[in-house]
Length: 302
Image (cartoon, rainbow, N blue to C red; front, top):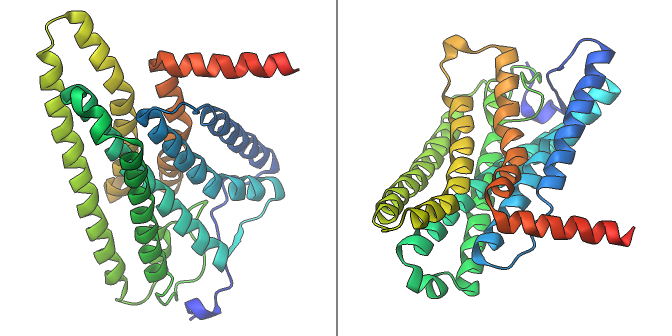
C-alpha cells in the first residue's frame, strides 16, 4: 500500500498501442495547438467586447497549453509518466483557465445585456476601469478556486497506485486513487463550485431572456437581425462550453468507458479553445477586417 508521500510520478493513459498511432496522435495534438494559437492571436481592438475577447483568448491558450504539450511529448517519445509536481501544476492550471473562461463568458453576457438593453449607459457601466476590474475579478476568483481544489486534492492520501485513467491529470481520476473518506472534502468543494457555476448560468439565462425581449421590441427587422448577430457568437460559445463540460462530468456511469472518457476530455478541454475564435471571427465583420489587416500587413513585410 502506497500513499501520496511515496508517489513521485503518475502514469497517464496511453492513447495508442503502436508507434504509428502515437505519431498520428502527436500530429493531431500539434494541429489542435496551431489552430488554437492562430485563432486566438488576432484580438487587438480596444472596445470592451474585444478587451474581454482578448482575455478569453488568453484563457483558451492557457487551457490548450496545459494539456496538449505533455500529450504531444508522451505520444512522440512513447512515454506515459508525469511527475507528481507536474500533475499538480496541470490540475491547477486547467481548473484556473477553465474557471476564468466561464467567468469571462458571464461578464461578456453582461456586456451584451448592457449594449442592447441599456445602450445609453454603455460607456458609463462598461468604462475601461470597470472592464479592468471585472476581468481582474474573473482571474482572481478562478485562481482562488483552482488553488483550493488543487491543495485539497493533493493533500489526500493515495493508496490505489499511481495509474490515472486519463491522458492528463484531472481531479476525478486522482480521487479514484484515494483510500480515505477525506475525499468528501473535495466533493464539498466541487459542490460549492457547482453552486457558483449555477449562479453564473442562471445570470446568463436571465440576461438573455431580457435581451431577447428587448430585441423583439425593436420595430425594424434589420435592427432585430443586427442585435441578434451581436449575441449569437457569444451564445454559441457559451452553449459549446457548458454542453461539453456538463457531458464530461454528468454523463451516466452506465455509458462510461475508457475510450469515451478520453473523447469527452478532448471535447471539453480542447474543442472550445479551437472553435471559440472561429465562431467569433465568422460572425463578426469587425474581427474579420482586423484579421485581414493583420494578414495583409504580414505579407507586405515579407
